[in-house]
Length: 323
Image (tube, rainbow, N blue to C red):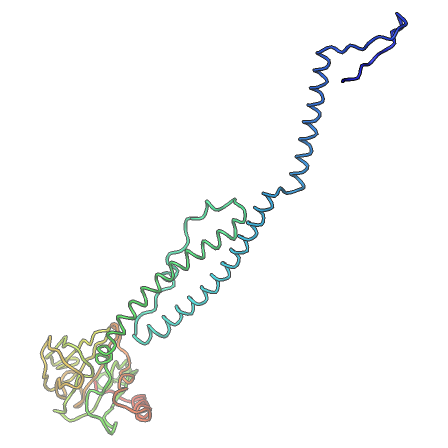
């Protein structure tokens, strides 16, 4: 039972019962509840500000674990990128060199990476920097691996054609020259026999008697047969494929026709003294990708290392060319 309270009435000089109206009692109850709510709210704010709830603690642990996994993944991506770089280096400087394929340009290797920010939606979230960086690395490595895969497909095709390619690339001397005494003038700047000025000599001159047999230095197809009293005179051009062509000038007679397929060692003509020539000889050129290069590097099927060194010394001597 609730306690009954009394108060002393000074007017009647008696103790009288305290009567609390319903309104006052309701007001007190409401004041108590309001105070409790305020204190409860303050306690909750304080607790959430300085103490984590069990759910928050669990989420924080999950975020920390996820961040750690991203860091580990990022490290693995760096290691994968190192391996990929090594593959690219081998591809450009070993595999593609062996098969004489052009290296893949750096801008192609990078797969057009960059430009518009594709990771804008990742900005502003927790740990967005590591998430964005990891996603970017994955995209970049994926694109570069695709380019590398295509390169290996090309290398595989080149490997399948290696036998044909090696048979096609010029690899022997165009005339019989076992004693190495027929090289009269090498590749480089030489005195022109007619104009008596120093000019670039774009081939090798092999001195030989008229009628000496001339051989194709690699498999290919005859591209040109010229009968002319000027320049190279009677000449033959063979297209070996793979960017290689060879030219044989100053012939006395040709033994092939345009479009004819020839193999290495096949007879294609005879040494002569036609065109701008001051003596019987064969002018021989190797052309790679449209550029005339030194034929001395294309006798590896004919010469031992010692013979190659001797041939190199002979062809390097500064003298007067025959044409």
